Length: 357
Ligand code: UD1
Ligand code: UDP
Image (tube, rainbow, N blue to C red):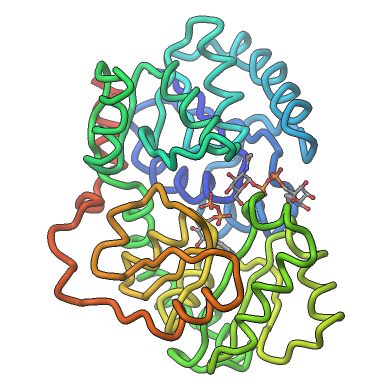
């Protein structure tokens, strides 16, 4: 069996690392990198550290408006698919690379497999919600991380080809956290940043809804971070870097440490040792939950509703006071962590098994 897998953005490299390893010896997989993320610390570092097979194609699409970026990917992916004639096209998550891959395949009648199917925020203004809803509706196999995702699909009449496999990000945390902890070079990150485990907070910001408020929105968030008793370390996504630097320059914040994006192994170490995570990322909310680190999600809603149970993840508006209140006075309830809703850490093998069968 021949599979073409489409990746393009940071979280997709991390998910592909575990699924591609599970394909090894069971199917021929050709990786296509759309080039959506291209900085070394947003792309190459993941392929090297996580030993992801080298993509056979890099389409070099880069940044652009939604239409330009998605359109260019669509045309270029179609060329690859016509050349490679795969049995299946595999896509991950909800980025523009996901939708372009799914649409290119579906139009020429190649069945699509969607990993992380069925997630919903019910906020159709989010580009990610548009991408995931459309991708789900043209997929032949829908691999859901949770039962909630299966139920969401069922409400939209999507039931054929749906299975609940667990979350591939749990597979990747279980596999790579151990590797990270055993790597002395990576463990130097605390010394390099001058931080002590459990005495700092970790934040990331890159969602369009966060940055579209411009400098005032970022200043409001940083004013909250400035009031927290522990230092806030922010590996800053390139989308937000300019605004974040301006905010620091304008306001002279002293409690905020902006750093370049880090590789996944260092990120796992930083997350597992933080006393709290503050983020608008989808993946990081779950990773915090897996590692039992309290999380404040700087968004109006989350797709990962299971993480809200017992206050392990709490939603906050982007208003300074709200963030401060939630960050200081949220105390998760350890007893609220019941049955694991994200699977058993073997989602990748289950996905490969279904496709190969
Ligand atoms: C994309 C996904 C988002 C995902 C995120 C993961 C879409 C619509 N959004 O958002 O769902 O959560 O990836 O990180 O697909 N840039 C660089 N270097 C890079 C990549 C980006 O400088 O290597 C800058 C460019 O200015 C670019 C901006 O970041 O315009 C945004 O990049 P883009 O890939 O369009 O969206 P993300 O915010 O990364
Ligand atoms: N991540 C990383 N380095 C960083 C920031 C994030 O390796 O500097 C990882 C993070 O641990 C998670 C993934 O990137 O696995 C999340 O990606 P992102 O927040 O960019 O996208 P989202 O999950 O919101 O789509």
